[in-house]
Image 1 (cartoon, rainbow, N blue to C red):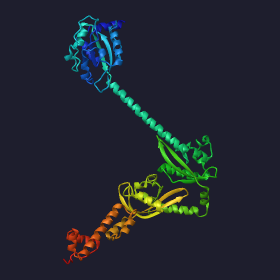
Image 2 (image 1 turned 60 degrees about the vertical axis):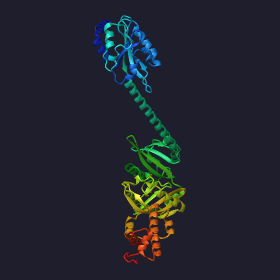
Image 3 (image 1 turned 120 degrees about the vertical axis):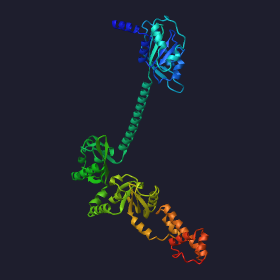
Image 4 (image 1 turned 45 degrees about the vertical axis):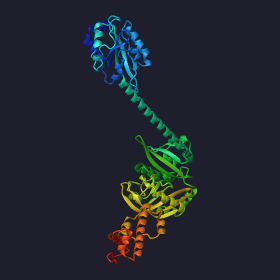
Length: 511
């Protein structure tokens, strides 16, 4: 109590100027009220508070300048200020903002200066010109403090920055919640696909090579309960003789991301499966997605037949070492396998970069050319001499011709494409000025094998040649008259004659 009393004597001795500076340092806005609660003056320190709104408060009871939910707070603070203590606690009140904007939040407290009714009550608006110009001059505040007028001073701090920070925090939280639910939905879809897939799938730790997850198809194929399969080493699921090939496949998958599948027997020795592995990363850890596809018993017996394995090995070696680019896709055009020649033609780093991608990413001048070829392939079973281009990863174009066929193995269908680089042949043919197509039937045969713009160019040349021949026939081989008939100059006609090989000597003219 002694400390409070000393503080009271210290503050009580402040003059008007010191009282003004004290209020300026402790608040963004100060309102001077008479003992009836009417705002008779104000001083605004914070430039963010809209002056056009604040100035409308002068001459009005303070309780009428706040929002409805804040009026009870204002009345309670006025009662506290008029009580014996003369000071209210800090509370938040909201003032209506300009039309179409949010409310103005203030943290305010009320202080009674002097005794109620001790001094004269100033008329509303007194000192307005001096104290509402943005700087807290404190004409009324200082007068009230010095004279002990019994007026009430409302000191307040703007909460606009706090509200803006809270709004950003809420927006960030809402964004995080939306991302969380998107992740949850993606995880749900993944879990549903993983559990309902008819293909046996294992998730294996990249370092320990232990099974972390297995879908029901994998548990049924391996013939173990879920508790025994999860946590077991991947190599323990296969026969001992498959260990070396399995380790090589996993090492290749870790180095390149993907590797060719491997045929291996399971631990029971009665079931053979085709094993494929691909690596994916989560955070800083690597995991291997292992897919197991049972090999039919007939295929297993054929593989053990004399000469079958050497023939298959030779065929695979031929595909890998062929100078023509060989690509195998599914029926939608998604690449299943490609040989090194195609990797070099498309300027890729590795075959794994092509797997799973649509072939029209590299093949065809337009997005419809490969679709036309595939449609013909599905109808006829094979197609040849389809002229198009291969677009490399670095923007280069290579003229190629494609021979393709439809492959059927059981219920599975695949498309095989043999792509040959014909740039040298086309350059030689262009230098030799190959003869023009002369019949409509020949042009019709090009549909589906040659792009439309090349057919149009070929047709244009054919029409020009036919018109020139008709004009020469009508004029009795008089080139000057034929040029006049065609609407061409003599020189233009001579150029076209040499181009089409109709006349070798344009100087001989009967005109």
